[in-house]
Image: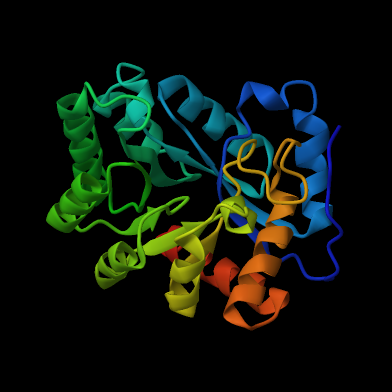
Length: 262
């Protein structure tokens, strides 16, 4: 069953900066869902690859749906799922707007740190070579992630940000963006509300990580881009502003990051 929150605005303001509609959780509902989203306020989605096959699927979705764009890359959990040369070739597609999802993940496994670091650095170098932004995955690898970002200073976003306000300050100093998703609605979100409070308005991106991290009150359901409305509501509450303003600003920010070179 697909769940959609009510969207009260006439203008489409939802720009989902991070989703995975190629995921098998969408098998059987993908076409229905993706055909419906533009009528529910969704103006654009960045579908992120995690290896060569999923990056190819992301590009295929971008060809089929005008509002979907692709990011191509190799996730730290997918080492061996592609090569830098393959990623570079995929990145030449006219609807590829970023290199991602790339980064470090020491939560799932930390016994291959050197491999993760090497792969991440290679993809940062590629992104700078191609003048494309990066979409960075950082889970329990804050120090190493920050060190490589400082070394290569790419354009881009740290998605589903889980670091401290101090780390966010360092990310912002490099001109990068902070991605915020459904986690901000969770009761156990400790550091993130403080980060959201201090972020400059021109550095917030909204995301889903669909089909995962569905916001309250639909946590047991499969996430989709229309759910960003609920994330924006919570951010508006924390920042003492209105939901429409949050959606409008994040849309503009995402367009500035991903479409500047289009």
